Image (cartoon, rainbow, N blue to C red; front, side, top):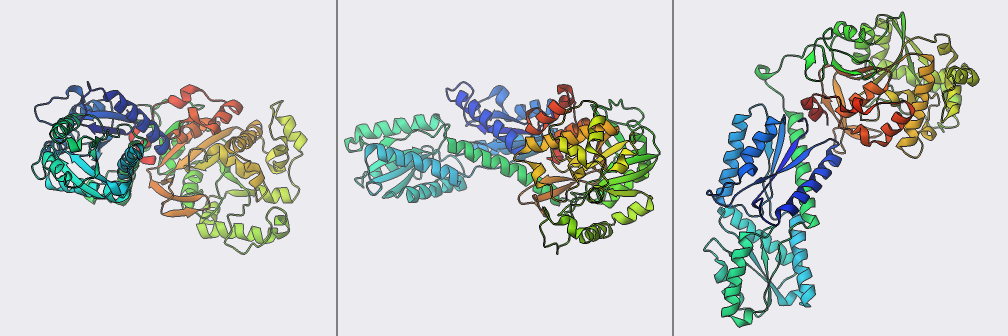
Length: 605
C-alpha cells in the first residue's frame, strides 16, 4: 500500500447502531482526502474504549496500525474523534501510539488532539440549540443551557467543557449557562439540575458527544429522575447529539488537511545531521518492485521508465536503452521565465547534453514571461515590430541563468521558432499536412508553424525535455512552446480539454516528422503548487521538493507523462487532460496501473 492512511478513533463500538453512520462519514472523509491531496488514500476506524476491561477486537488501534503497516503503509495519521476523552482513553491512546512507533521504526505515525471548542463544533452545537429554541418558540433571553459532559478526564479536559459552554452561551445569546458532569463530583449533573431550578428558564440540555452512547444513557436516566421529582422541570429538553452533521465532517476535513500540511512543513525545514544523512542513491531504473541497475531492469519504451541519475555517464547508460544513436538530437527545452525550479535550468541541461551521444539543437520560442520588464506594447499585435528588444531579452535570459555557458560548452545550437516564423522561414503548411499521412488535426493551422530548417532534418530524434511541475504540465504540454507566437493565450482556449487538444495536435505533427521521446526531469527538485508556498510565479505560489536525480523517459511522450503525472498524485483515469490524450495519442489502462515507489509518491505530493 503506497497511500497515506488516516485512522479515526472513536468511542463507539462496532455493534452499536451508529457504527454504520460512522462508516459512511469515514467514506466521505476518504473521498475528500483523495480530492484534496490528489492521491489515493484510506480512512480506517479504530475504537477507544471508555474502560480498560473492554476489548474492541480487530478495531483496537494497535491492531489497526499493525494491519495497515503489514499491507505496506509507510505513513499513518491518527485522529481522535471523541469530544471528551477520559483519563483512561488519553493514557491508552498515548501508550498504543508509542508502542506502535517502537514496533514499526521505519513507519511515520502522526496524530493530533481534539479541541472541543473548535469553531466548527461550536457552530454545529449552537445550531442544535437555536433550532430547538425555534421549534419551541423560546426567545434566547428566556432560555438556559446545561452542558452535560462525562467529566472523567483530567482537569484540562473539564476546563474545555467550561470553555465550550461559555462559547455556546455567548453565540446563542442565552440567559444562563451551566455545566454538569455524570462521572465527576464537581459539579455533579444532579447538583447542576437542582441549581437550574433557581432560574425559571426553559432549560436545554446539550450532550458533549457526537453519537448516542453511555453518556446519553446516563444523562437521560438522571434527567428523568429529576423531572419525576421536580414537576416544574418537566418541560426541560435533552437535545440529540449532532451525529453525522455536515459541520462534523467539515471539522474532520480541516484536521486532516492540517495534519498533512504540518507534516510537510516539518519535512521542509528538517535538515538531517551528517551522521544520519543517507548516502546518495545510485543511478538506476524502477523495476516495479525496487530500484535496479540500468543494465538489469526491463524497459518497455512505450510504457516508459522511472529512473534516476545525477551524473551524465549513468544518464547516458539509461538513455541508450530508449533513444536511438544519432549524430544530432532535437531538444525542446522549457524556457518560459525566471521562476526558480520551473524552467530547464543550466544544471539539468548540462546533465542531458553531457549524456547525449550526439550534438543537440535546442528548440524554444519567445514568450512574454521571459523578460525583465520594459516591454510596454501589445504582445498580440506589436511583438514583431519590437523583435530586436525581445531578442535582447532572450539573450539576457540565457546569460543571467547561466544557460548560455552550458550551450557554448557543449557546442549546442539554439533554434528559436518565433524568429523563424517572423522571418517567414516556416515550411509550407500543405507540405507538413502531407507528411501527416492522413492523420487528422483538430487545429490544422498548427501545421503552418514548423520551421523549414527542421524539415531539412526529418527523422532526427526529438526529445521533449520537460520539468516535473504539475501533473499536466509535462512533456506533451511542453510542445505548446513550439507555437511561435510570443503570446499564446488564444491557444490555451476556454478549458483544459481545449489546451490538451492543441498539445496533442502538436505531438501528432512533430511525431510525423521526427521520432518523439519524452524526458520529464526532476534531477534536483519537483514543483509542488501551494498557495502559501515560498516561491512565486505567474501561475501562483509553489514550493520545491528536493529529489535525487529523478526523471521519467519513454518512446513517444505519453509514457513519461503518465508516470510523472501519477508520481505527482494525478489519477490519470479521471483526468480531462488525459482523456483527450488517450483519444488523440493513445494509452492503456495498464500504463496507469504500473506499480510506483510509494514513499516517493508520498514525498512529491
